[in-house]
Length: 310
Image (cartoon, rainbow, N blue to C red):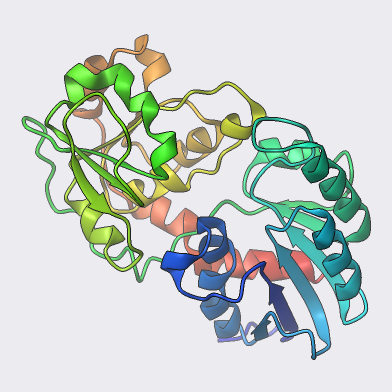
């Protein structure tokens, strides 16, 4: 139902691919763009994807951060009243995932658009140096897809779960003795790890069921740069909304999520001792009610459009 104090807008989402299959696009594209189409339309907005032959009240450009992206954003100014950029990585300063071209292009885009939408406060802090209008929208979750909460946790013989891009799995090796023969890794391909683990290939359709086969999410990270420190909460969020307890390093986005979910223990609070963190988790609630409400994509669609109206 459209709110009485809102007016429907014509919104153009522009993504750097013609694909719509969640299994074949970057995760940021389906999380921050494609899965938001339904809740935006539910608010009464007319939403198109990659259609430059219309005029828009709002155009949102997603993910692009190269020189050609600057030209795309300039072109969008000719067909939209307001143009925004959604970026999920801090490309405003150099790090292992951002070279000079990324940095120069990102700063140029920031000077063209009417505002920038980012998933974390750390990225927002960098973005505000180049644009005054920055909106923090954490990666939202589709509660219809992640619908069935896990019914019981096997605390005594748990399956430890990890999901993500295989190249980011090596921090698990520091806990090989704990995880050996007791872990399920969900990724696009099996990572090279020093311990035995079960593997499940990631698909969007099968993702919730794969997560529910885990009893405890085990998500260590190496926090060495603004790239890793400013990652979004989504890796942990998908476990949290299913009521699965989490052991993780203290990312700022995970700390924000912890305000809505008690079932997360940070390794730093236990001197890196995973067993101590697990014992602490046993005494905590894993009720996902609050975290599901806080990250629901329908609620964030409303907040996003309120921001886009200016």
